[in-house]
Image 1 (cartoon, rainbow, N blue to C red):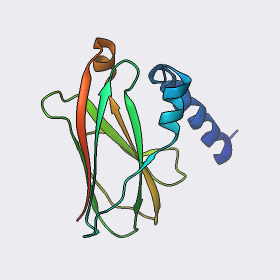
Image 2 (image 1 turned 90 degrees about the vertical axis):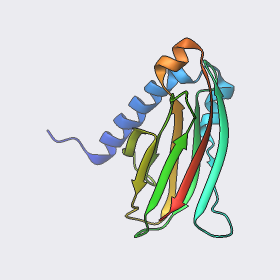
Image 3 (image 1 turned 60 degrees about the horizontal axis):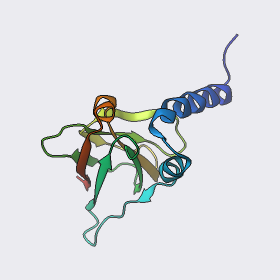
Length: 142
């Protein structure tokens, strides 16, 4: 019997939450992850950046919301210097699947206007070691 699209979305959502539980050490951390930080393009309309820090095991994931337009092309990058333990995934508006997963750089070509979520996180190995990471997230319209 085929699975309905709604049931599939519910299953994906539940699985995503189950995977996020190890990263949400406290309810405060979970609430912080649930509310994405707004990432705005500067006056030039071509660059949006944000700097952040992670300290494992409690603070290891952050979400950013950025408005992208269909038909444009955007370069997304996260740089954490030499530590190389910070990565990101991109989610389209209302879509449970990722546009790109576990990367440090990628090009996003939106098929629809909307608010995309950039999920920045530390690797599980770095979290297990109690590592720290300072990073810069950059979104550039190309």
